[in-house]
Amino acid sequence: MAFMEKPAANKLLLDDTVPLTAAIEASQSLQSHTEYIIRVQRGISMENSWQIIRRYSDFDLLNSSLQISGLSLPLPPKKLIGNMDREFIAERQRGLQDYLSHVTANHILSGSEPVKKFLDPSNYSANYTEIALQQVSMFFRSDPKFEVVEPLKDIGWRLRKRYFLMKCKNQPKEPLVLSWADLGPDKFLQDKDFQSAIKLLPSWTHPYIHRVTFATASESSALIIRPFNEKGTLKDLIYKAKPKDPFLKKYCNPRKIQGLDLHQIKSLGRQILEVLKFLHDRGFPYGHLHASNVMLEGETCRLMDLENSLLGLPSFYRSYFTQFRKINTLESIDVHCFGHLLYEMTYGRPPDFIPVDQFPPAPSMSVVSVLESLLSCEACKSGMPSVSQLLQMPLFSDVALMNTEKPQFKIPTKLKEALKTAKECMERRLAEEQRLIYQHRRLTRAQSHHGSEEEKKKRKILARKKSKRTNCESGEEQSTKCNNSNNSGSGTSSPLTSPSSPTPPSTAEHASF
Image 1 (cartoon, one colour):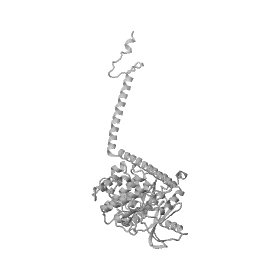
Image 2 (cartoon, helix red, strand yellow; image 1 turned 90 degrees about the vertical axis):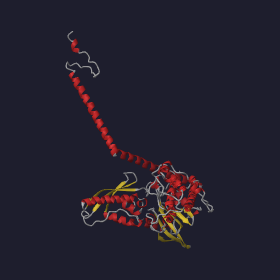
Image 3 (cartoon, one colour; image 1 turned 30 degrees about the vertical axis):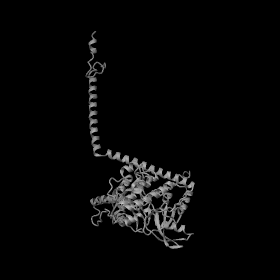
Image 4 (cartoon, one colour; image 1 turned 120 degrees about the horizontal axis):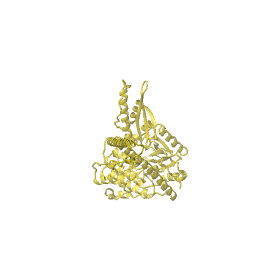
């Protein structure tokens, strides 16, 4: 198999979606300021942790960079006088810990560049925009057909993916957007197959897939050019956002929360499911469905970023579905992610938690029925329906599709086999990560149960009972020793007796005969 020739090719590539947690372990007061020692951990393994030292001024700079989100974050206020007092330092440490917990618990904030650089400077110190610009310049050095207009700073959520507004010199009035991205931890295609797949992207057309104008790749990254839509994506429609604004500004704290109407939910949902079914039927792994990857053109939606799975990039919702072992295939990932998207279309915001215990009122009960099959506790534990099953549900089955454009999506047989192998490798990595998370969760529950007050009381009662039993047994043993000592006056040992046994005749009575 192609993958086996380079089995460790993706081992050094970092998964940026693995959550970071942070705990302030101690503080140390110096002559003019206080430093806080923070233990940061990636994922569930204590072995994958490190210490950083931060001052209050560092927290203040981080908070300033996150203000663009519009969220009110609980950073403790500044204090100029008495800020070296021991009680004040202890109180501030608790406040800073609360601040870190709020930031790392937010799905968008925790993955943002300011937070990653604050908590993990060794892995996120690079200037990714500058690196991307250098790579783009190298790509087009020998082909001046395209020209960079301006960087689109931070419009996406990925740290290692950058966007530039472009124009083609032959068609200068048609705006284009270029995306440049590093390879990710799920890049399992051999280089030759990877290059072949990237080159095929501009030839693929489908009524519900956003077309690619140009695509090329190096050994470590890829560059894709598409038409730029001034109206933006489905997520921009839901959040009433400007497409060129930074991701944190657009989606962290929408001013007005309002879902789409029922007609839009049904029509857009049906189109998305149709293209997902098309991709899965042809053996193309996707796994990257979210509202920012759906471009809108009038009442038609078009799926974007098919190259993500070729590059091996992790999904936007990976930290959610890694918690559930039944969501273990690329199709079940797409179906679960469709649940997130449907929730946003319905309610105008993402769910607070996954799984969802109770759904707010929706435009139709048929919407809630679909959401329950995708995001409820029972669904996450028992598994997802297939895309075909979703298409048969009442919410989507009566939607008439008007677009009759014929798809062009040819994949050579050899590449199809390579994609199948890569898909299996992605699913194996996911299953292993889910297994480790499941084991960690069981261990954590057991430790929590062992340390609970009720368990401590039970152990104390058992310890007292055991102590009493031990004392009784040692008392009986001491009594037996005393009896044995009293019965051995002539130097001849006496047989052991029990309280219920008759006393044997004394040997002294027979000595006179």
